[in-house]
Image 1 (tube, rainbow, N blue to C red):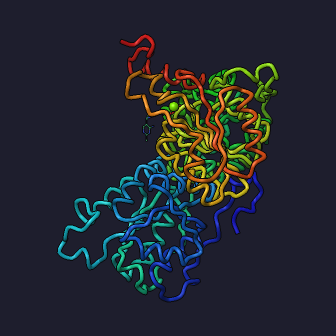
Image 2: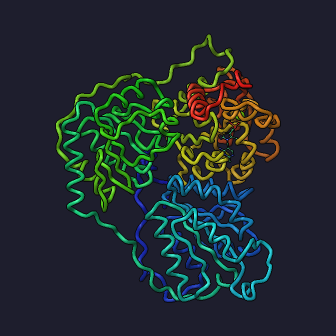
Image 3: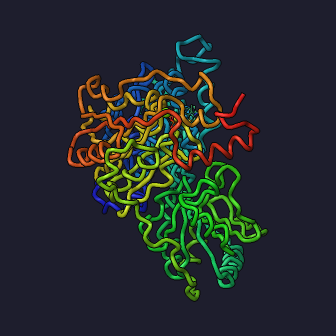
Length: 577
Ligand SMILES: Cc1ncc(C[n+]2csc(CCOP(=O)(O)OP(=O)(O)O)c2C)c(N)n1
Ligand SMILES: [Mg+2]
C-alpha cells in the first residue's frame, strides 16, 4: 500500500512492480483493463470532470481500485495530477472530449515541459458516431483534432478504435509515460470501453543500455576533471527527483566532499539540511550572495540532471562557462566541449558514485544558515515579503511540502530554508499561474504524511483557489497562504498598467463559501507567526490571507524583474513613461 514510506523517502521511492502480460486474463472489458493496468503501474487517484462521452469510462474508473477525484474545473485536475505524479511517480487525469481535454491542455503542457509523467484519459465520440463525419457536440474541426493537439504535449498517444490493438496501445502509452517521464494521451470512444478486448502484445518495459565504450570515455573524462579540480561544485537538477537518482549524487558528493547547490526547479531534490548543501543557485536569483559567488568561482560545475532555463539561470545572469562544466541529463552528456551519445543517465551517475577520488577541501561558506528567529519587539511590525518567507521557514519541518504558485510566491520561496528538511514543489520552468492550490490536493493525496503549505498570490488564487472546496470535501488540511498585494505584483515590477489590477476579494471568506476550514487575515509579523502556529496545531484546512502593501516584493523578485526589464529594454515602473 502507498503512503507508508518514511517521510524523507517521498522523492526516492522506487516504482511499483513490473506488470507481467501473463497476469491478465485472455480477454477483459477495455475499461476494466485500462484502470487495472494503471493501478498496477502505481496509480491510486485520478483527477477530472466527467462528461457524456466519458461517462462509461468514469463508470469503469468508479469500479476500479483507483479513486476518482472530481475537481471544480479541468485545469485544476491537470495541476493536481502533475503534482501527484511528481511525488508518486505517475499521475492520471480523466476528462471528457475537447471541452474537458482542451481545458486541461495547459496543465499537461506544463507537465511535458517539466517532465512530469501524467496519463490523460479522455472520453470521446464512439466508433459508430464517427461514420459520415457528422457535426457532434464538442467536436472542433475533425474527430482527430484533440489527439493532434495532444501530440504536441505528449510522448505517445492512442485512440482506442480497434479492439485487437486496444490493450497493447494502452500498455505502449503508459510505458512511454513512465520511461520518458512525460505525459501521454489515451482517447477512449464511449462505445469501445465496455467491449471485451483480447489482452495481447503487452510488451514488457524496454530497458535501454548504455554503450560501454562511450560510457567509459565520458566518465573517465569527467573523473579526470574532478581529480584536477580544486573547487568543484554539483548543481543538482530536477531529473534527480524525477528519475529517483538523488541518492547516487549524494553518495558521490559525500565520498568526494563536493558541495551541492540546487536550482529553483530542483529545490528540495537534495535534502536542504544536508551538510554539503549550500542553497539555490540562479545567477542574480540565487538564494544568497555566497551561493552565487561559490558556484561562479568554482573551477568545475557538475550539472547533473539540470534543465538550463532562462528563469532557473536568473534570466541570463548565470555565469557558467562551458569550459568548466559537465552537463549530464537523460537527454545528453556533455563534458566541456565533448558531447557523448548513447549513455544512460543512471549508468553515468553510478560510475561516478562508485569512483575512488581523494576528498576535496570544502568549508561551508555559511554553516549557520538558518532563518533568523522572530524577536518580541518586531512582532507588531508590518510584514514585508522577505519576512513572510523567513517566518514560514521557522515553522517548516520534514512533514511539510511547500507548493508555490507563480508570482512572488515562487520567487520569494527561493529563500525558504528550514532547519528540518521540507519538500518543495513548483512549476518553476513552465510557470503557469493557478498551479498551487490544486497541486496541494495532489500532494496531500500522493503522500498522506506530508502537509501542503500552499503559497499563492491573490491573482493566482482567483484562478483556481475555489479548489479549496475540493480539499474540504476530501477532508484534506493544507495550509493555504494567500499573498495579497492587491493585484499582479510581478507584472507591476516589469510594467505598470491598469491591466495589473484585479478585484479585491475578502479571501478569508472562502471558508464560509465552501463551508469548511478556518481562515484568518494577517498583516504584522506577530500575527502571521501566530496564524502559522494555530494552523500547525489544527487538523483543519487553514487559509491565511497575508496582506502586504502594493509594490512590496521579495529581493529575488526585485532582482529578476530588474533583469527582465534590462533584457526587454524597459524602464523601472516608477520611472516609466
Ligand atoms: C496562466 C498564466 N497567466 C498569466 C501569467 C503571467 N503572469 C505571471 S505572474 C502574474 C501575476 C501574478 O499575480 P499574483 O498571483 O497576484 O502574484 P504576485 O505577482 O502579485 O505576487 C501574471 C499575470 C502566467 N504566468 N500564467
Ligand atoms: Mg498579487
